[in-house]
Length: 237
Ligand code: ATP
Image (spheres, rainbow, N blue to C red):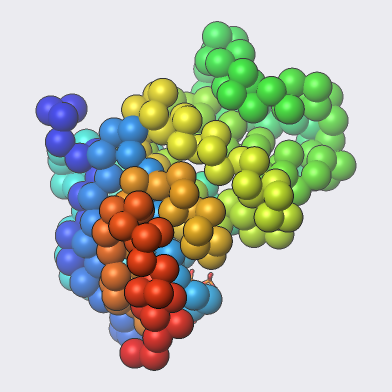
């Protein structure tokens, strides 16, 4: 709103049954910026996203969205502010068509917005009448992101969009994420296991291991120091 970051995560600690799975997580996301949250299996990437939206209750720390503190006990309020989590299970119904999903995703039908979103994922245009269960994994993933875009989000947090997709498809899709951030001023948090692909479309990267930030920096610096990234990624606690 005032040109400050759209999302500020400050000292967030959260976990399950009183045991922290992430500790002291801090990062910011500005308008048009892509920030990758990277790390091996179990590092705490998904937990980070869930804690930001309050689906895993934080034990410490705070989240500020669009300049105002977030009440993590009210996840829906955050969605209303335009901070959306795109889960890795894609949230789709195999028996419904692509067009059905577009309808269900909008509170009010907005044909202009629908057209703009389809322009961003032209592959979906020819699939509107197809049942989603018959779409490819990549097409389903495009639909998931397209659905989120229909609501004109300010911040999109995308959990492992590459899950189950061939690297070639991921390679094709990631640049469109960067484009939508730039062109619509959306702040994007990208949770990924594909380190280099993710960093190649990101402004900054945060690397988690065992629930802690072990390395962070400008994406281009991280790409230039792959040895450090690998050590952080694979290093023991
Ligand atoms: P992955 O890439 O495998 O999804 P991740 O980096 O997203 O990994 P998280 O799913 O956030 O990691 O898991 C972080 C830690 O929290 C792990 O040790 C995991 O076992 C634990 N954990 C995750 N979900 C739960 C849960 N519902 N109950 C208890 N522990 C959980």
